[in-house]
Length: 359
Image 1: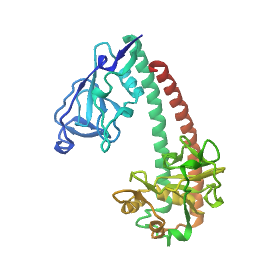
Image 2: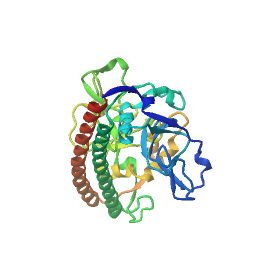
Image 3: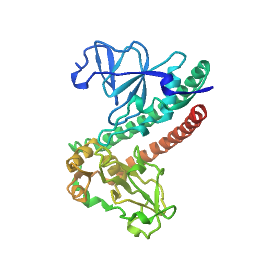
Image 4: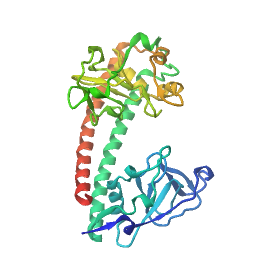
């Protein structure tokens, strides 16, 4: 094992391709952007597998393994392993370095090769590199499989929702229409001063505590000031991100499925209570609701207001049908919890090995 700078392990390349100039679906060779494959064209720039590093915009610093006979657009940097450097090993090494933290640019974040090429890294012998790359790739494939199972469970919930309730936009099952305000109560969260933040006390959930429609307690803050009882979360509440600078985050929700103690939510959040909580939770996750709240965006901040919610009119199924869906929802969520536990344990293993190999 030795120490080298990153520039000794790989060479860079640039692309002049612009997405607007591509003739879509004109061939068989993929072109990649930050979100993955954009289209297929009748040419390719790279004949061997390589790495693509996002150097401009959203996701800056994220690295991707990309196949032979493909290309990237100009916001992606090509990285080519040098002789006696395994591609998979290089991929996981760069992933471990988390180069996004080195980005510059106030408006549009970017990172260039000169910003990270002198990073000193731990390098193994080539045979050991290949072994490490294979191990980490295997663990990665397990993570992908588990995440795909979660996606399939979500599809089952959405399918059951449509089966029982129909298309809620067109109201295909002719349920009676009601105002959301007639069946739900919503409350804006806690306003607190910076000096109230403490290492203990009442937990305050913010937008970052909602991940994939689940509560995530990483980066939870606490306040030592007294919180009104009405602002404490309780079982079956729906927690919603009501205001955020990013439109994609506004309206995301998590369901409080179990008893929760001494926990409130910030002023940019909203709690919604209703006996129809599972039905509303899935409605809030629907594209229909996302289209509805998009009209509440402004040039400075995107938001869901109580006024907007008061204007929402939705079909109201009978409570027996809602309860049937709630039972199904609970059963699927138990299965999802088991899969999420496997994901967490596998990710912990991945993080531990990455630290051992590259730290």
